[in-house]
Length: 180
Image (tube, rainbow, N blue to C red; front, top):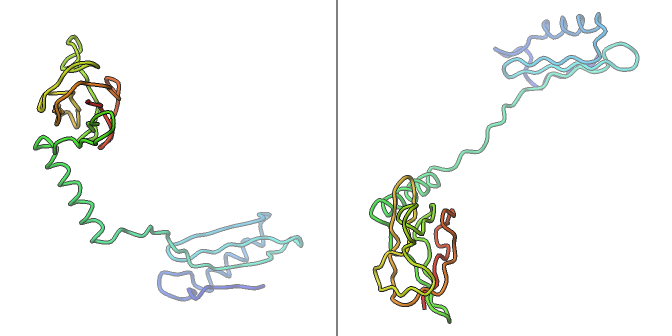
């Protein structure tokens, strides 16, 4: 009979040799093919071989799986990033980014949220293709965390294309309008 203890037999809070021997004797008296016992930092697994007697006994230390925690500096960076984003959103956000294109300028979403082309369900859209807008005119609303954020035009010109549908979820930096 082979008993492997993994360095835990006899230590406080661990299984004692006598307890293990009693468990082996009880296991041999049963018709069980396999038995496993886990207690605190110890584990015992008995498997019956072909001959009807216990074939192997092993005492294994049980190591709880603990995921690696992010470092303090990683957590501080995450918190600072979230706080900065929240401050910008509460202050009306930064002006939407405008990308120069051959066909005009692309106005992108300044925040993540739900895109609304109209001020209310029963109203007309703020702008539609062909409308002329001036710098500062409201193009749409993006709802973020129950706050309605108006997105102003940062350039003057004609709406060439509306790139999202009313009610769509938009990501930060996602193109919304092409203005020429």
